[in-house]
Length: 229
Image (tube, rainbow, N blue to C red):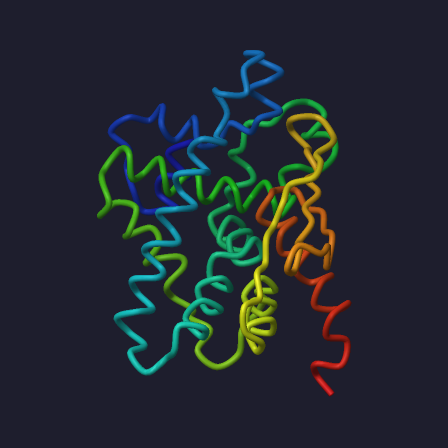
């Protein structure tokens, strides 16, 4: 079964346990081993950085006429949850995930957040198994095939908020985690964003990054309600 996944991603692992680890959701690790460190969360952390770097390098080299703001938005669009979940669906990654009973029953195999995290974990597993070339090839095959040159698929609210506040001098944005709730396999994070020390928006999400994006969206709506008029 796992060989089907290797075929789909186009890479054969020398150490198959790395790929198996990439498929282990925290709900499975907690239920089977009572140890969240055996889940794919650490791989997800690494894969997120590798993916961001490879995409950033690609955009820098291939779009020399684009300013930093455009490149930032393009990168955010290419590595967002929706894009990565779409990649997961193309390779039928959900079918291979190791989920705890509760997550299985609640539809975890088709949940975008879980699928997106698993894609990042697989990228990290390939990196640890075969080096940067192995990870880069997976990213090239599945992420770099559709670059949002003219129209972005998804908004990057943090970048938009940063650009809006920078229209005035000496503006400082800070994001702070103010709470988290739920079991380890289904956590919800709450983040507030402050502008010059004053709370401008509060957001929630299944990761700190997503909560920050939601907080930035709330701040934009509150501070710049007529920005598109």
